[in-house]
Amino acid sequence: MRKAPERVLIIGTGSIAQRHMRNLGSQFPSAVVVCVSSTGRSLEKSEVPATEISASIEDALNIPPDFAIVASPANLHLEHALKILMRGIPVLVEKPLCISLADDPYRLLLEGREKIGVGYNLRFLPSAQVVKNLLEKKELGDITAAFAEVGQYLPDWRPGADYKSGVSGQKKLGGGALLELSHELDYLQWIFGNFTQLMGTTRNSGQLGIDVEDNVDAMLITDQGGVVHVHLDFLQRAPSRTFKAVGDKATLLWDILRNEVSLLLPGGERRLIYSDPGYDRNQMYTDQLNAFVDFAFGYGRFDSSFESAERVMGLVDAIRASDSSRKWIAIEERQ
Image (cartoon, rainbow, N blue to C red; front, side):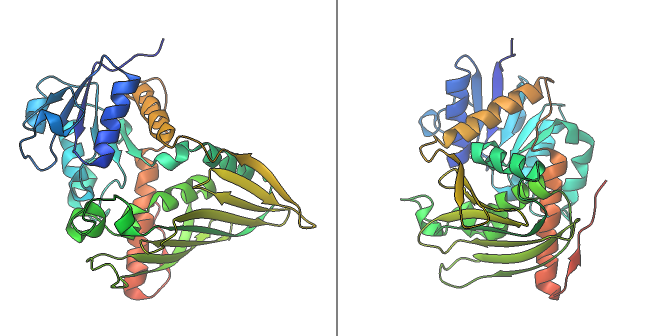
């Protein structure tokens, strides 16, 4: 029988933190869910769907939880994760792992990395598993090029909220398209493995009045010599999230928003491989949560690991370096 958590700490009060609280309540009704504000401000019980409110992380750790979830702004991820790891407690860190691998506290995480998972939940989308399996079985043949694209108008992300004051639109909080939409970088390295070099550019169009990039474009080279094109933006009025892989046997089309996968075959035939547009997208988060619970209790590995999130941040840093230098950047392999 799977072990259920008795006590869980969540750091943060934003939309993703509250999603985790609700999912913990539905999946593990008897668990005590403790919430701490990421900024240290006093919370009212009515603000969040938690069982208990604690004044600080230190106070919350007086009764050790089975695991913790860090859902604070990205600029605080390292600080908060370290406080948890110093007690030997497993921690799920919301993406991204950090702001940059150049951040000093990042190195302090290395000792506790076997207890860290990172919340790249797109891996748990059923169509993502279909895509990965098709590519692993070489159903497309040799892949020569791939294209990953995501765009959604930032003011529409959270209706009723001021997008300029949220995490996504503020540099000091770790916002910007490169970090906020780094799911694409995660699933690309999950599917293709390591990349050897890249060239990238980041831009602020000025259309949104924010101090971070709202456009990112990059070209990544796989260790097999394939070329992967990536586009991320905060500007598209009609939300779009797609992936295309071109092979010498077939071309794969993945519509992530529709949770649908198709193959384009010789002669123009289009074969629908998987389609579930009515899929409840919260299921990704509950599947991720259950996988992390098993990991926290030592029953298996968590696929979105510290090491894989570290590789994502390596790509992020390389895109920034390429944007600054206007040169191709070799991807550093970290041990």
